[in-house]
Image 1: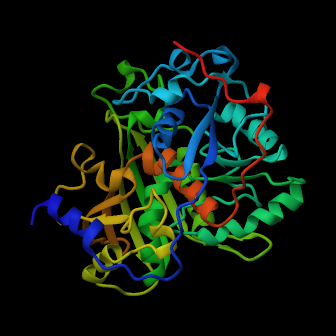
Image 2: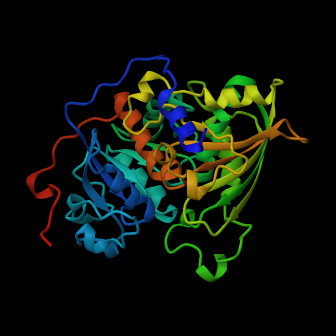
Amino acid sequence: MSSQSSVGSDVNMQPKQPTSAPVKRPEKKWRAGVIGATGLVGQRLVKLLADHPWFELTEVAASERSFGKCYADAVTWHLDVPIPAFAGRLVVKGLDPNLGCDFVFSALDSSVAGPAEEDFARAGYPVVSNSKNHRMDPDVPLLIPEVNPGHLDAIPLQQKNRGYEGGFIVTNPNCSTAGLVLVLKPLSDSFGLEKIFVVTLQAVSGAGYPGVASMDIQGNVIPFISGEEEKMESEPQKLLGKWDGARFVDAGLGLSAHCNRVPVLDGHLECVSVGLKKIASLNEVREALKDFEIDTELASLPSAVRHPVVVLDEPDRPQPRRDLRVGEGMAAVVGRVRECPLLDVKFTLLSHNLVRGAAGAALLNAELLAARGFLKHRAAPSESNLTERVSR
């Protein structure tokens, strides 16, 4: 069977085992804002919000140099599809938390994200953040819906601790962590985890724009990404750990990461070795990955993939050029599952760093928040504060 047919089988044809109620399509769309809308992740969010069944993009905000311009004039668009027409006409606002929307996505640079996200949460806006600043805060959920949806139970305590009324902050993990933990989850559930060793080959788009200088990366590999190894070694502990009602309890894993930048545009490839708590055959490991399936509640979310881990049998897969768009970029693709002479099992995984690892992850988080009643329809702003649109 070809890889394309096997991918289609994994994603679309395996039976679903409902474990919770499906989510109904809302009668009224929630109004979404994107702060940091001119960057690469912000652009992906703008694209993904076009024709979204639950959310309507009503506000874009960015730094002062873009303030007052229509979005089409303010942004240097890098995606391979045109700017959505409605988005191009939106006037770019500043980071003042007085936007005409029900919640905001944050795609801000970490240099400004921390206090800006707190300002919006304090003003009553739910903040769905892609930035690193609050990921490891003791009262902020670091969320992958397929992995740890129960961590949303921390939101009321966050609001109490910080005096937020209606607002809060939820984050998604680092782009390289996202694919890794998505694959580790079914192994953790089936066999338990003790040790993980991972080497990443990360695409240049993960560095943002303009990112890595072409003379540094062409025909080269850079064996250092600032802060990346630290994130990969700490974030899985929180994601695979537990919320005990008062605090997050780490998973207690032994985890070592080596992170490298390679001359690939999109897609993070990771070579992973895992030590399991229970003895398992290679076939059992493959089946645990292939059988990983989300419940009915998550499957009802517009951006969800029923089988978020896809296993390929070809000896030279996955590859960014061939496998990056599996599951519309929301699946992690695994191949080369084999014995590890040092630990127990090793494999290669691929995930889309700008979709599963960034914009798509934030969108899925917002969908789960909406489904669970954490997003409210805020009062419409006064006429003078309505989203401005300009004719070009």
